[in-house]
Image (cartoon, rainbow, N blue to C red; front, side):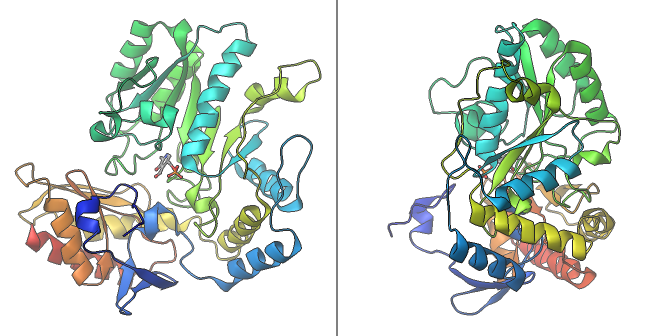
Length: 411
Ligand SMILES: Cc1ncc(COP(=O)(O)O)c(C=O)c1O
């Protein structure tokens, strides 16, 4: 087997893969035509569901017209311009500009470099420190790995970027103490997922996100909201962070749901405060950063078609409408002897934490049990997570709960 899967135990996977052959709405089918409810929306991104003709047609039309052309320097294309205009209008960011990338990890690198450059531009080059949270996941690139809060992801690589700190994900006191310890005039930015996803669906405590925004404002620290998972309806709003009305991030990283995964695309919404010097003659020297495929017209055409679907079908609010039904469903499993904790209730995503006595392989057994019932859930450390397509209905949530119950019986 030549394909080395990401985040995979290849010793096991090389004996047995799950070959997904096709998709249809909330379902995917394997090579034996077994049907599964895609309760994870693939990897937290298939928000509109699979195999929508409108998106395929839009991408095909773009590929026939102009399959790709770079956007370095003064080059651009219509889909890239249009998608940035739309996202800038929708984002809860003042005077927003949009820097496009190929995915979430790319976007984190952009945000980290822009944060540091911002302070270079302001004559404060010593402001380089970046703070993030335990359980946080910000991709697997250089800055993103250094900012990671999932222990096994950040160890065994040798030294990472030293000017980074991870603080307990749920404590404003810990964040403030870290800022004071490092020195506020040394801290460039704080990276924060509104609801932590890959780290096991960790909801922020009441007042936490607003408190973070206040602390950042007080100390002149840039607030980077990592909405790679939480945007595009997952929390029931365009960028997730609108759930906290007064919070205006300096940057928002996005990817995944922007195209519902049909073609890879990511980006950073950047506030005017940061972008303005680059847009001003004689302002900051150019931002010497960019990916070959930034503004790829086929990816942007996919995004435009997906944004049209979100709007036409009013899918964005569904993340909020469905959060109660999902939480009710998963909470109905709280009495199961294998369950230690249910984490749900903010957005259309949830997790079950298993009892600490459960062995490290228990999440994989749970997922295997659910899979046999035709439900795809996602193993996370110490538990299982779900984030179904926004097109899901109550009947699918019921199916998910039954699949999870069967999986829990295996634990
Ligand atoms: C919050 C968050 N940030 C960044 C990333 C990295 O995105 P990508 O895998 O597209 O590089 C992810 C991926 O799951 C994520 O959940």
